[in-house]
Amino acid sequence: MDEHAGTGPGAITSDGCAVEFYALLPSFGEPEIVHAAVPAGASVLELGCGTGRILRPLAALGHPVTGVDDSEDMLARSPDLPTACSPIQSLRLDRRFDVVLLASTMINAGPVTRQGFLATVRHHLRDDGIAVFQQNPPEWFETFTGAEPVRDDPGGIRRIIRSARWEPPRMHVEIEYQVGASVWTHAWTSYQISDEELAGNLAGANLRRGDWLTDDHAWFTARPA
Ligand SMILES: C[S@@+](CC[C@H](N)C(=O)[O-])C[C@H]1O[C@@H](n2cnc3c(N)ncnc32)[C@H](O)[C@@H]1O
Image (cartoon, rainbow, N blue to C red; front, side):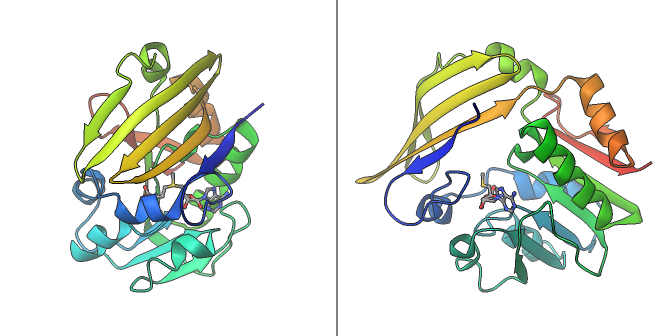
C-alpha cells in the first residue's frame, strides 16, 4: 500500500507535507536548473507548487509564473504569486504555458496518478513548449538504503531517515525533519520508473523526452510529441 502521512506542528497536506516546514525550506538550486533549461522570460506553470519555494525564485529570474496546488494552506503561504487551488489531475485552465514544471519527484507517483499528472502537463503546454521534470532516477532506488541516516542541510534543517523499505517497484520512506525545537515527519512512497517505462508514460500523454538536465538523470525535459 502507498504511504502518504505526516506529523508535526501546523497544517499537513493530503500527501503528508508539513506546510510550516515547506515555508522554512530554502531552494537547493532547483530554480536555477529550470531557468537554464528554458528561454529567458518563458512563462512557467508549476504543478504542486506548495509555498512557492521554487516558483518565487523563478519569478525573480524574470519568468511570469503560475502555481497550482490542492492545499489551500500551502497556497496561503504564497499570496505574492498567482495561484489556483486544484487537484493537478482535474486542472484544465484555459491558457497554455511556455513551460510546465513537475518538480519534487512528484512524477514518481503510482502509475494512475502519474498518467493523470502527465495529461495535465501536456494540456497546459504550448505546442512549442518545454516540460521540466524532477524525478527520483532509477539508480536512486538501488542505492537509497538509509545508510546516511542523518544529514544537516542549509537553513538549520536536520534530516533523519527513520526508515526505508524497498518493495519493488516502490520505496517507502519515512523522514524526520528537525528545525530548532520543531519536529515534523513525512512518510511517502516513491515508484521506480525505468527509462523505458518513462518513455511509455510520456508517449501516453503525447510527450517525448528531451534532454537530461543533470548527470544523475534527476532532471529532464520533455516536449510535445
Ligand atoms: C513535496 S511538496 C513540493 C512543493 C514544491 N514543489 C516544493 O518543492 O517546495 C508537494 C506539493 O504538491 C501538492 N500536491 C500533491 N499532490 C497533489 C495533487 N494531486 N494535486 C495538487 N497538488 C498536489 C501538495 O499539497 C504539496 O504542496
